[in-house]
Amino acid sequence: MVVSAPEESDFRPGDRVAAGAMHGGYAGRIAVPPESVFPTAPGIDDAEAAALLRNYHTMYFALARRGALRAGEKVVVPGSAGGIGTAAVQLAKALGAWVIAAVHRPEAIDYVGSLGADVVLPLTDGWLAAVREHTGGKGVNLVVDPVGGDAFDDAIRALAPEGRLLVIGYAAGRIPTVKVNRLLMRNIGVLGVGWGEYFLTHPGAEQLFGSGVGQLVAAGLKPPPPVRYPLSKARDALQLLADGGVLGKLVLEP
Image (tube, rainbow, N blue to C red; front, side):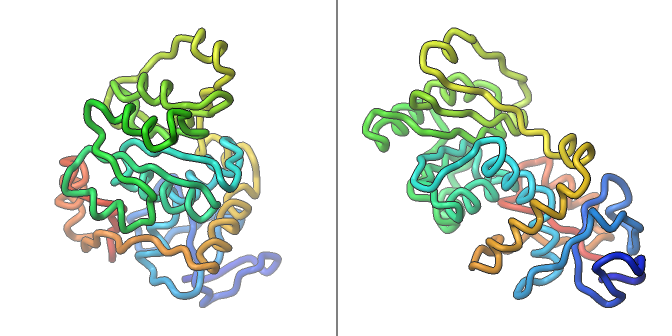
């Protein structure tokens, strides 16, 4: 909630807002520039609004701008049970894509299915063959890869001609490399997604892409219930996250 705001801004004390911050996010109050602030969408509580912040903004930027996703295209998301994967599945569906979600954890299959994915697969040996089967052997137009590691090579092979792979992160630990002859032979592209670098060098980007997410929320998108911990239990919460015990987003509440 806004405590004070510059007169020339669009905000007033008492407004429900969300804001991105590079430092100080655990504080009870924080000062942020107006261009990093946007209204909280109606119909969601503060924890849900926090869950929409970095992951959903990153993925809206990734899909809409970097990947130039078009309605009707096919998307696969390896590692779709975490915060980025959850956002990728929901936003790709909201933008009109047909989505395959692949998950490491067997216990996450039902959870990811509840997000609206058209197909949910285990991310084990043979997942590439399953993707090809579900796409009639053609592959997908877009891969959203927050995993890297050993799955990366198969993710490249999962692309149809003129497909795009979005590099979001390296959750598996190993930073992969790509054989550029694969890019040449099938006219495919590997695109980096650096949302933090982008909004730091493009004033107004946070409000622009935050507005896009807000419009999708107004049209019915809602993040799955976040895992909530009191701020006093932050150490336990972060350990649970490090241990892979969180599905979706974890939120600390004051």
